[in-house]
Length: 149
Image 1 (cartoon, rainbow, N blue to C red):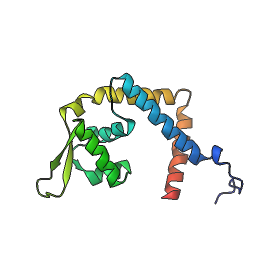
Image 2: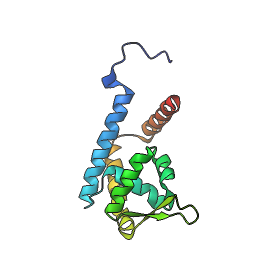
Image 3: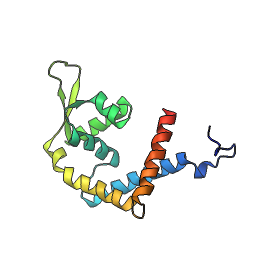
C-alpha cells in the first residue's frame, strides 16, 4: 500500500467514485448524442455494435471477453439488437453449438451517425483537458486496473 493512503478515505472523492461518475455521465452524454443523430440505440448497444463494426463474425463469448461483460449480459444485448434488426446470429459452419454475430444492413447503415455521436461525446468530455493530462490519467488508471486484476 502506498504512503499516500490513510484510514480516513473519503469515498466521495475517491478514484472509484470518480470513475463510476465518469462512466455514468459519459454513458448519458453518448445516449443523448445518439438521440440527436436520430438513433434509438443505447450507449451499451453502441459499444457492442462498435466492436462488430471493427470485427464481425465473432462468437458471443469472444464479444463478452472484448467488452468485459458476463456472457448472460451479452446474450441479452444480442437478443435486443437482433430484435431491432441491427445484427443477426449465424450458426458456425463446423460447430453448430456456436453462434457467430454479423451486422445486418441496418446495423451497418447507422455506423457513421453513431460514430459521429461518440466523437462528439468524447470531444465535449475532453474540452479543456490537455494531451499531457489525458496521458497521465490513462497511465494512472491502467496501473489501478492492473492492481485489482
